[in-house]
Amino acid sequence: MQAPAALYRLLGDDARLRLLRLLALERLNVTELTGILGIAQSGVSRHLGLLRDGGLVSEERDGGFTYYRVATSVRDGQNGVGPLWPLLESQFAGAAATAAGRADLARLEEVRRVRKENFDVHAGPDTRERQLVPGRSWAAWARALGHLLPAVRVADLGCGEGYLTVETSRWASRVIAVDRSAEVLKRARMLASRRRVSNVIWKRGELEKLPIRDAAVDVALLSQALHHAADPALAIREAVRILSPGGRVLILDLREHGEAWVRERLGDRWLGFSGDELRRLLGEAGLADIKITTGARRTGDPFTVLVASGVKTRRKRT
Image: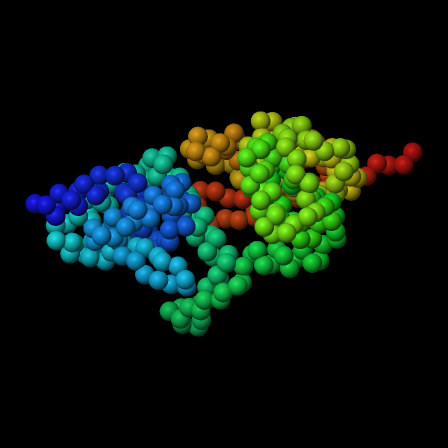
């Protein structure tokens, strides 16, 4: 009885059940699991070690990473304690209906999206023959397109930990990065320092009251920031205020969705925006040449990214 009892104790932990559910869907490494679960990396490693020692997961090395998946013996019912897998599948099906379960799956889809963007897989004439092409990433393409852009002044509004800020600094003459969190700005400054970026000005402030003078920049970026704004309409008007005539607002944000768990887990104030709503907000802020397109969509992912832009009209001479 000792072995079955130990196994059932092992399964009596919510974090380990979440791990098994994810590893039944996808082969994942510790870094990816940490991002999905929101658990410290040391905790994820400890749980994986226990699951591996219990014969529930297997590990394999690939491309410098250690990946984990549910052990084949568990799926095949060869674990020595009877048909365990049907019981676990029933548990996983119930978890899919919970907010935490949907959150885990949404983050898993994000991991899959990032993988696809960084390593495109191409099928040959025989669909069984698949070729991995390292280095064909969207990040590389973004940097390449930056070579074609003029050295304009950019404001990164709601900059977070500064990843987009640093990428923008590669082609902008100057970037003003704004965020409400002092702690987040501290991490962003550290990132910029490690990347030896020197053309960024960091400011603490709210989207609805930007600490930037009128007509100070040529491009105002709001990347996944508008759904955190207390007043999205005012945030866009502030972005327009700091633009020079002819400047552009560029918004990346979520299309309207029904995933209410993001309010508590991610601090979202708005469950995305429809294309028509973004068009109305940009128009009411005084922008012209408004464009709304789909930026990213993946089957099974509850979130779709919309890209919206508009131009601040130049004042007519009298």
